[in-house]
Length: 407
Length: 229
Image 1: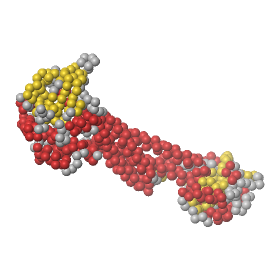
Image 2 (image 1 turned 45 degrees about the horizontal axis):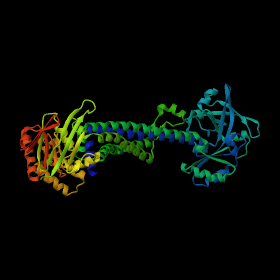
Image 3 (image 1 turned 135 degrees about the horizontal axis):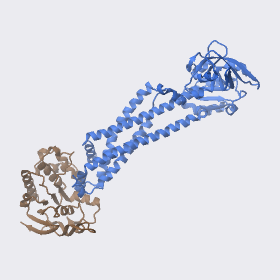
Image 4 (image 1 turned 90 degrees about the vertical axis):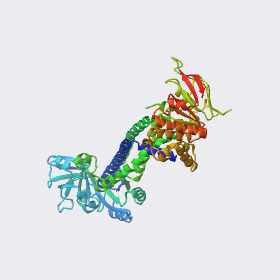
């Protein structure tokens, strides 16, 4: 075996340029794969993080019926009790309670249905960074009566500009019509324009007064944990603690997140297969050329007693050795690229409009788990073996008496 | 009576038997004894190389039998034949056919590695063979760094390494200049006389014919004369 390995090793360096080209193809292929996988992982993470921050948090607590029918009457209270119990657990990082009202925003030029969230400005800074999502204007902690944040798109449709007034009307807890005059203090922009155009943010206290709810009532309590991995365990534990409320995780609130993740994974598997097929044919082509060039020599080897199994092993090993040298180089370069860009981020501002439609941020931080590196190397070794098989079969099916005469 | 190492009986090699048959060999029956120094001669296309290929287990006859070292070659599987060739037959080809990436020493010991002969026996034998073929000082050179004559010497050393029953040399001097050809023949003759190694050449080189002690002449695939000098 030692001799076969040595011979295979020496054989691949007979034509250093050709071997170099194949190895460069493997290196570039692996690097491209690592980069692509890392990039798409980064995109998924960006989407998930953006969704968690602006929409779902890690967990949300609602009145059980509110989930199916978001009516103003399905609220929970008192907020202090919930907050106290949640913060007693050291996995909890921060919480925020909100009122959620379905209403109508009207201006002189029209009206639009909207979901208005009544938030506590200080809490919201912590949990959803709402104060940092202002395209223009001021945050809700501004010293003015009834401030409201709407998206620029909503403002355009209603024909209002900053500091102009809108009328919010909705049903209060007594089932009566309630309305209030709100001043647009800022345009908010979470990056997801579709979502933004259906939402508005006002102060908790302002909406509480208009809706005539209990002092510390809330429709929604958002919870952020220190570690996202604790979500499932935390959810099942607290479902028992809050047996009269419904606690849902971010994947339940936004199932499209799971779907998106799955779709990306499927797409990446296809990318891996396509790259491997391309490499497969590249290696087969090279190995086949190497075998055809060496017909006379292979015929001589068969003649002097090198058996078919050894010749098969030698040719297959040549293909494997090339990949075994090139793969770690590709992985290392890929690892370096991911490591660098994982810190620096990839700025996609040029395409930000398109990406924001999908709720993806414009700065992507590629990342890749070690398991994926192992998968790539494993796929490549399989590819190298498969690529070696056909040329090896070609080699052992040579008839020595014919092969020796080949020029 | 001397020991017979090669025996062919009623050998035929016919191409296109079912359409327009071409007879490469017709009813060739020869016996070659141990220690012989035989030249198979004849014009191009007379069947010399075909006979050597069949005797060497590289080709199958259409009819007839070949016995080498008391073993019938017909009926052996491809891998059995490969192993048989490895252990019983040494080949020297016209175009040298060394492994270009290995040194002279590595080429010479290659078949012994295939046989699994361990060190130090292998190294000792390679040293003595390289010495015997007069190439010991070039042991670490690659074939591309050797002259044609030197390469053919390495090929002879490789052929001798597994201690075969005989050596088949297909036009071994065809690509050599006169001096190299005589040197090679001197060396082979010496090995034949001193070590009783059997050599069977195919050739139309008069330099080889004048050294051979037996000349089998083929014409149109048939033996037309078999002369022992």
